[in-house]
Image (cartoon, rainbow, N blue to C red; front, side):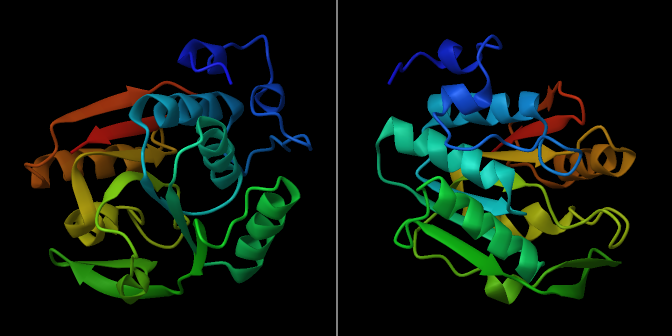
Length: 212
């Protein structure tokens, strides 16, 4: 494999070519956009995360796992989703591309529950479902739950997951051009002194990179 991260940022080659996928990715308006996928590839190559957690499964799971496979080191990926049927589709996608290894990949159903944080009510994954076989998280990718569940539906991510985050970990938030996600990032920065950096990811739907 070409270890140069610039290889994976090369827009003259498709993601499918770069990651040697068997099947084309359906880039509609539901999965991450192709440019954001290139960013994920780049971050995995440069940061070399060992323990990865996703909030929301799908195309991103495949992108991350194929990159990890090509890098060739041991890892664990846990992906949480509140939709059983979508979780099953993610599993089928990973199986088709030969990256579903039950020892390394955990796809976890977590039903939406309602709870209070700082006086406001949120509908989010059930915190009781967050049980890990590893010590700390290197990379947290936040692409769920659905924004339609409640105002600032992805805000609880850091509040719930903070105790599992390793020092120097990275949190990536998708859809960060939406007004609520912009507000969420500002709330996170205001409320968490552990955050040492927050950066904008310039893609079609936007992203934010938060450094702990």
